[in-house]
Image (cartoon, rainbow, N blue to C red; front, side):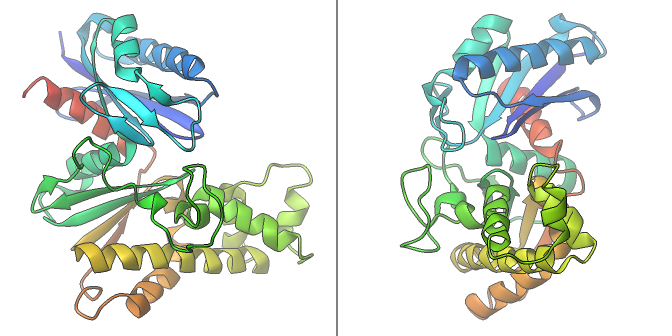
Length: 318
């Protein structure tokens, strides 16, 4: 019998999960689409948990705890999602209690960017850095923070909602209720909106040809940028400037040793990091930007789920 732990990472587009033992050895990984209502999402998570339980070394009875990372603000102690701008069905939703009741297994809830940070710490960073930031570039933007080897999560677990810091005080409306939020410009959603805006101006591009038969996505734009399509490269340049503005704010506030970059967009780091780093240099204070290391994750899809599994493991040892 091997004690196993399941980690679930809820994203605005996809829910990912994996099962691992206490050493971080993965036994199975799977993903499903993020549906609309909270009930549908609860059902999907339970289906994912059942599927993962059968791929482990033992059986469902060997799953000791489940960790779930979710976007938005949470009440960690109650296991409740208070509000998630990119998943409107999550409002005062008692996710941990619901899943625990249906599975009979202890469930721990945490912010999605925090579990991404924990996963990166466990599987990538180790003891290399003591003061560092994690950003996740997906449907929205999440963030996590380590200060002197301690994770800072705020009073209820919702700190570092960096996607909702304002970079344009009269900017685009955001589902969170504010406007000009960083993630409206520098997330996967933001890059798609930027592409639509530029396409309306009539620019010639291979993107225009592809979207006659395909959906416009951040991945499609990335693929065309890597083929040197001029419009796609222009989109990434402007996107990188928006990203750099937010990064400069974080560098000025926290003076980190490193910024770890996760989320689906991290695969495109060669397209945006050079420009973003230049913007950080221009906009942050001397003495703060010079020694920051930028670390794109090699496997950003699984790292948050590893982090969710780690909080499940740790919950039994506290």
